[in-house]
Image (tube, rainbow, N blue to C red; front, side, top):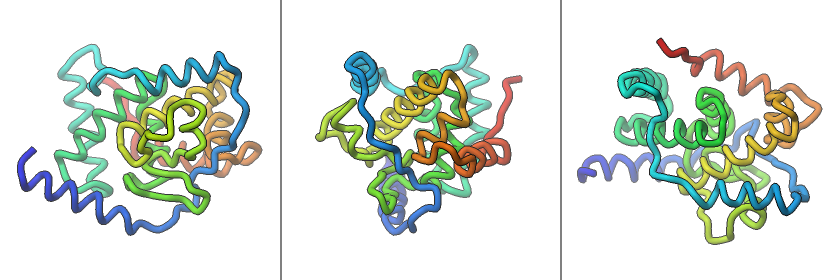
Length: 202
């Protein structure tokens, strides 16, 4: 990374510390997990290869990256960081069997892509992960402000809720936000997805 890129990255990170609280910031409910479920989730958090775009054709991956980078400019002005972030989001979402475009919508709603966002209930980072998950599926040394760690936790948790809800994404999103029984949060995420992040392969 060049000195300029590093300086821009640090500036982006430091300014994100000043971000306001968010209306939909996460309040995932602490729950009892079976040993089997916790073990599977723990393995997902602990083991991952270096992030990469997961496309059948490299040219399609580059087209996606270029288009999403343009859309993300309003939130992240550093191009190097934008492209790295998008690559991590695509990899972690795909690895968890989730639609990366939905994850982009979720991050927009949860943190507006601010790495150091903290909610009034203590949820942290891009995907607003509650710290209690470190005890269940990771360890207390994990840094939830680390971008890749946060994405891996968040995608693993949403995948778990999607499994619990038998593929009902709206209910899975509501569980993720700790607002099961209300459509306000799922609607916000899906509206963000449809408005800004929806994408179809050529």
